[in-house]
Length: 265
Image (cartoon, rainbow, N blue to C red; front, side, top):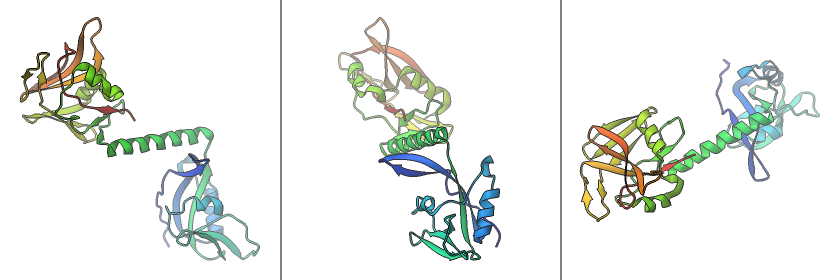
């Protein structure tokens, strides 16, 4: 049978003391191997430039629920004609004749540094998925900043009211990054912002309310507070949008403007 490969995943997790710790890396899967062929396959495997071994039953069991089929294990059997394998469909170790043909996947122990890097990558990925479920969009920005798909609401806030959103309120630098790395498509009632990874968000025209409470530019401009106060003044910086222009400028902190939230994974 022709050897086939399937990339399971670069890393799998082991639960230790209620903390997700990465301990092993797994190779691609090869099919239809006798026990001796499986052992030789792992011994000679140089996938990704690493050395690999045939895993023990206890290691294979960590993949239960992620892999199907029967896979050879390195555990010794008291019967010289038999060898252990792990049956993922049944969730148990079994012995079979060594000349039987089953699947093989190889394993290597990761270094402490590799485990730390993998664990951090997993935590970041989980955080990103959590933020996506909360309505934030990964735009592929250099900083990794995620933006809400749309404005927080049609409500307007003074600078200090907006500041209550804490680190979810974008800084001047966050707006400048978004303006620099993304495409802004004017739709008449706001901007559709599409970034290099193809994902997009929307900024709606909502104008502003001045310190006297009067509304202005509600159909033609978007005014979004940043988290940055203008040094030495009673003003704050905000991002203003309109047909054909976008810029950071300042206004009195008592002015009421829209909020568009961000998240840092």
